[in-house]
Image 1 (cartoon, rainbow, N blue to C red):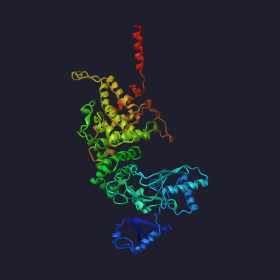
Image 2: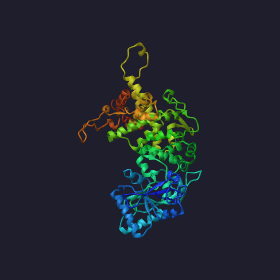
Image 3: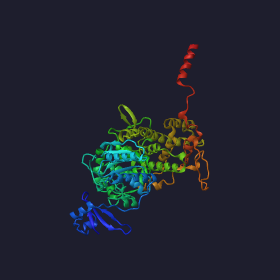
Length: 597
């Protein structure tokens, strides 16, 4: 089996005949390949696995691509690619047009994607876009202006990019590139490169695939992108420590992709992510706004946010991303010590109770989405719920900023994480406070609803009344408003984890809580109807006051409080009530009385 070496990357390419195809299938292997190490590559390979000058010339003359099943294009995608190939022929271009990155990965996984990035090899993205505009005019298609995004390293735009609409598709166009990183920055020095160099500089092999529009083929120039997709594993094209040191944000991207696609992280990635120099680089090279962008995608996207945050904790990076203030926390005067985190350092609970609460909240959110659309939460609500669950141990702590005190949850999300959406920080802080209060109120409700004891010991103790529960519950509803079902879900998680903590290995929390969650049978104002197959599956047609409050499993006392609050208390919607007499009417009434007197 012969081998050739990429003159740019030093990557060994071994050829093999493929019976079902007329061309050759190229398998790319790193220079450390076993056959290369043993000097067994045939032809005029050198003993160290590198090719001779003759093979370098051969490589320059020929192009290799991995032969894979053709991915399925939509009708509109096929139309656009056919248009580009027609333009290519009529203009006599020598350009190789490739779709790069996430679109190719998603298509290979059988998923739809509208994130089309085209890379060209012999001109800038702007010049290619001008050719496209000329062709659109020639064919009489509608034309929109070309947008040119200049290189902006602070926003992770390292090369000029042209943006335009081609037959209804929004497309980004740039040229292939190679990157050189320096020790003091995650911003690379960018140069025009080859397809091989462009593939190798990417974060993971599954993101380094190309779709060659000219040939209608997927190209796997790292030699393992397709196999890693099949094996559901994240691997870096180069050494992971170098990959992460070049751009430390890739650690968070690894966490996000792993959770999104349920891919396993390569052992070398895990080892590199735990290195102290990577932790240090994350602190010094990556802006906190970039942290927020990645994590907002985690908590607002598909997949398991809890798995992602579990990786964050396993890599000991939670205190880097969710950094605490340099000054000590203050204890909120409105929260008694017994209702505060039991730890002197609330951040320590992220490793245990907070992740477990988050896991249970994730389960509940999934149950709602599966049961009925009327019960499900919006993207913003999901983001708020996951952040609140992970930071729930900070309840009762505050930070002093410019002589004003604010909740620790809000400060971490707004000032430390630099959450782009202020609503997330504000809502998460309110949700944590409301959830802890609901967790306490369910115990007050249970005590108030219990039969009156006639024993002397019981009669000497002050008894909680339903009026007290009603009043305190109303105060919480006035603060949390329409999101009180979300607050009840988190409160339930707080109660469950306090009584049923996971004491075994951290990987067991999902199994541990499989029997907990929503109890739709006891959800108020639910109705039953048969689905299309007539199997009697219950479908939620209505919920109390659109509150989305459901019953809960295992903890009847909490479930009874939640249903009472949503139904019998009459409180839902109290934040929209209008006063019987406004302040202006009261003042007017007083003035009229004085005049009469």
